Image (cartoon, rainbow over all chains, first blue to last red; front, side):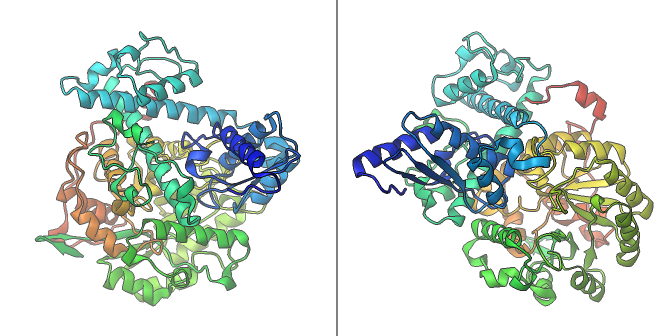
Amino acid sequence: MTVTASPPTVGGARADDVRRALAVVMDPELDEPITDLGFVRSVAVDEDGGVEVHLRLPTSFCSPNFAYLMASDSKDVLVALPWTGRVVVQLDDHHDSDKINAGLAADAGYRGTFGHEAEQDLEELRETFRRKAHTAAMERCLTALLRSDPERTPDALGEVVLDDLPRGPHLDALVRRREALGLPVAGTSPVLVDHNGVQPDDVPMALRRARSTRISIDGNAHFCRGLLRTRYPGSEDDQVHRAEGAEPADAGHDPTFIPLTTLTTTQTQETTR
Amino acid sequence: MYTKDGESYFIVDAHIALWDARPENVRNIQGQQFIDCFYDYHRNLSPESEVWSKEEYLYQGGERLMKDLFEDGYVDHAIFQPAHLGEFYRNGFGQTEEAFALTQANPGKLTYNHNFDPRNGEAGLDQLRADAERFGLKGVKLYTAEWHGDSRGWRLDDPMAYRYFELCRELGITNIHIHKGPTIRPLDRDAFDVADVDHVATDFTDLNFVVEHVGLPRLEDFCWIATQEPNVHGGLAVAMPFIHTRPRYFAQIIGELLYWIGEDRIQFSSDYALWTPRWLVEQFVDFQIPEDLTEYAPLTTAQKKKILGLNAARMYDIEVPAELRLPEADETETGPRQPEAADAGQMATV
């Protein structure tokens, strides 16, 4: 982090303010804040409320639509802070850096940035990944339940309601994803539902499909973290450990890593965060 | 061939390249970024002993390729799947002439697949005819995020693409390898989505569609489509090296694939020169699903043999010594089913 051109206390406090604001910007694909992923490369503030933030991604060829979303969301949250003046967000080292940075500087919006490559907006893309995030959160809860109770069969998971799930980070995450989709969060609400709240006819199949979604997201999240570390040595210091999908090899760059016997069972995984 | 513990494995490396990313061939910053990205993949996922210098990584040449694959890598047969990337590299990324010459110089060891781009229109159709005749094409490699003038991507179900698939059918080019990339028009949607594979696989049931990287980073979308379409296969390019640092992730990928599409439609590859086959073959033969992942059955030797070579050999009519062959398995419990039935059961996004 670079904090420049202002008294350390004020500058430091404001830089922290910037980071806190950026912590609500999500990588929609990985379902994590960009601050946890190490995507915030630098934060600089000046005494007039000017802010300059640089973002970095795991590869130059990360999807430009996701890159744009994260960069433009970052600018939005910083402009919304009461004390900020001129806000500059720059995406570094991406194949579309010039295009995206120019679009951000001019507040050109998605269509203004990408021209003929943009049709309407990125809302459908966001929605697709909100649904996937919910699917994965749901699978984590249900698979944990299955493993904690060998008597329970996959067929019976259709009857599980929110109140049946143990309290903890998995449940909290599921509730947040349900709220994002507008799904009910009452204790009597069935857990295994699609994005419209509809329960499946074929419960084991629905669980299997959800599992493949969860595996994809966890796998990508760790691969992207790893690529960022390879591309930007030292960036591991800016990454927050992701318990879901962690492997023994992660111990090398994560001092909090605790070897786990399973990926998905225990609630204790998330306490390492 | 690779032999261990009395078992012999026929090895087909179903996705290799002979590329040139040396400075004189790099056209622009994107060309540099592209090879840098590959090199980061290589450095990030390889065992330390297998990491090459950047200079070695830019270009290997035919001699090195033959050694890495056939002398050191246990490979019996390998298939070129070249990416053109003409907007990034002066003479293209995949080296057509060099790779084809190598194929001719080593009969029986190499298959040369080429590529096409439907945005080349009518002229491209004529070119495909000429290429099919010259190279004796059985397959093509298609990269949907290829840049082309002011277009940075295309879909397999674009009308012009259909003209190309019709021509493939006519020319006997039956094996269509698909590699999804980050750009596609419009950018509104997920470029890695494989819905267009679903459409072409339904409309061209006599063609095989091999989705490279098994659809990663959208494994779930790929599995769901592949389970409905018996002519959709999974290529393990880029998935294989997870076996080293992310073995649990790898186990789950393989477990899901075996569940959804079964052991007869999965193809091994090193994605040379992203990685080399030797360590991948050795580790895969030794690999087992971790015991605590109880949702998956242990991998069998027969499944490993099929994935490592027999499946691709069948698709490409590559002669396999009689003692190394295996019969096909029964269908998976998930399918293949009729696409209409599957789509009607819309539990689609759960």
